[in-house]
Length: 532
Image (cartoon, rainbow, N blue to C red; front, top):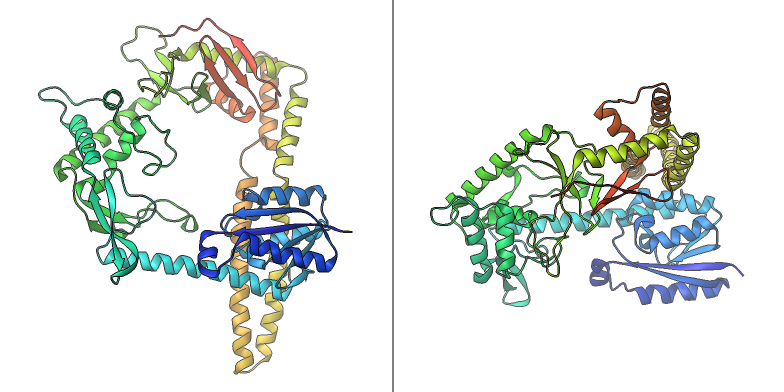
C-alpha cells in the first residue's frame, strides 16, 4: 500500500471569495486517496498565501522535507492552485517531486505525469493570473478611493488616530473613510514634538533617550504592534520616536502608496507618485518641518562620525538582554582609544528590569577576538574545519540548486516549445487558428520571462559571498602569510576574515563568547574588561 500525504492550503481571500476551507479540501482528498487504495500517513495544513513558494510556507517546509527524505510515495492536493499560484514555483516543484519518485495527484486533474502536462500548465497560469487580477483590482480600488480624498484602511491606524468608518450605501459593513484624533494619544505626540524641537520653557531641546526615559517614568502606554510592527511591547525607544517624528500624518497629510510591493522590488515611491489626503493635524506644520530639519542635521552629524572603524560592527551582541551592541566614540575621553561598544538598550527603562551591561572598550574586545581567530587560523586543522563548514553550507543550499537546475530545464523546454510554435504560426494564414496560436505565443512569452526572473533571483542567492572557493583560497593565503610572520594585517583584512568565518560575539559582564561557522561550540574568553 502506497503512503500518501494530503496537503491543504487556504488564505483569507480564498475562504471569503470561493468558500474554500481546510476541512472541505481534506475531505475530498481523503475520498480520492480511498479510491486509489493509498494509506494516509499525514495531513498537512497551511494557512498561507499561494504566492509564497511551498518550501517557504510554515507547514509546506514539513511536506518538502518529507519529499526529500523519500518517506512518502504520493502527495494529494485538492486543486493545482493549492500547491502554488506562482507558475514558476508550481512547475519547478512538480518537476523536483516527480524526479524524486513522488506521485502528485490533484482532485481536479488526477495524476500529474509531467511538469509540461498541458492541463497542469493551463491551470497553473489560471491560478497565477487570478492572483495578479486580485492584486490589480485591489490596488486600483484603493487608489481610486485615495484619489477621491478618502483614507484607505490597511492594517491599523497611526498612533494618535483611529479610523473613521461609514457604511456602504447606508448599509453593509462599514468602510474606512478618514482618520479622527484620539486625544489622549494626540497629547503624547504633541509633547514629543515640543520636547524634541523646542525643549521646556527656556531649556534646550530634549535628547531622544531622555524623551524615552521621561515617557517611561510617566507610564505612558507604548505604541503597540498595531502601530509599529516588531517593536518590543512596553518600551519607549528611539526607534519608536523616530517613526513618530518622521510621520507627516501628524502635520495633516496622510499619503497613500508610499511603499512599493515586493513584486515591484520594494522601496518607496517618489512623493510625486503618492496620493496626498488631508486629515486632522495633531501638530503645527511649521513644528513638524522643524523636526525634519533637526532629524536631517543629526543624520549628517552621525555620518561625519562614521569614519571611526569598529571591527565587530553588526557582529556583537549584549549577553544581558540579547540586543545589538553598537560602536560608540567618547569624544571627551582622554584614553588613547576612546572607542566603546554599548548595548542599544542603554538609557531605556524596561518594564521589569534595566539592562545592566555596561559599555566595554572596543580595543580590548577586538584584540581578544582577533587573537582567538589568529590562533585558530594558525592551527593545523584550519583547512579541514573550513572545508567542513563549506560542505555544511552547500548542503543548506542544495534545495535552491535543485530548483535552479529545474528552472534551467524549464527554460530550455520553453525555448523548444516557442521554436515549434513559431514554425506553426508561419504555416497558418489569418483566421481563428492563427489567433489561438497567437494566444499560445503570449502565454509562452510570459512563462519564459517569469522563468528568467526566477533564475536570476536564485543565481543571486547562490552567488552570495558565503564560503565560496575564492574566499577559502583567500583565507588559506592569509594563513600562509601569518605563518611566515605577517601578523599585522590591515583592519579591512581583519574584517574580511571575520566575515568569511561568520564570527558572532556576545558580551556579558567581563566575559565574551565567540562563535564561528567553523567551530561547533562557542569559545568562552574571560577578560578584565574595563567598563563604565
